[in-house]
Image: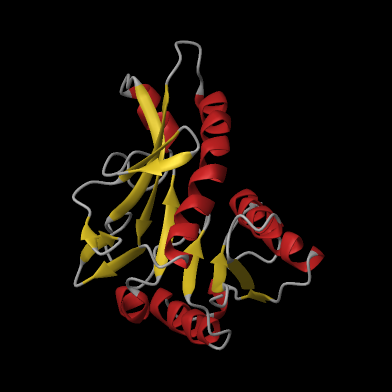
Length: 220
């Protein structure tokens, strides 16, 4: 049996997607081991989740560095000491310097609350509602220097209801995120998904479009 995938999770907030990953590992639904949780916020709930399960943590304050690049290079240097196979950005609310992340391209993913390429950046639920969209969703993508612009691995979709507001839409979508992210990490852990020469492949077959999460599984 292959060794579990070593993942390091970066989070700035409460860590609900981290909790979903840890729960999947605990249930043996995800052949992975979380070896580090890192944050730019000392008060992040994700750090408390890690501490409660004896996962090592790392906190760096961006204000201690002269610029973003210096922070990011130190962050990734320290992440590397945990020897993760995969970095998972789960609510990490920072734009990462391209030079710092370059060595990790293909080994770093992010979950973003929109159907990329729609609504990169912040306030995605508000923007979907303001645009009158019929559906909304979440995307897991490989991280590149382009903000929320790396190849999209998979998406989960949900209809926008007439009575939805920003809070209700975010709440309903979060439940889907908690299913989507562990499913994608599992595919990576099983060696099914990879980024090869800037092309996304599943079972060594090129993926021309993101997989879709429905009925409890990922579908090409």
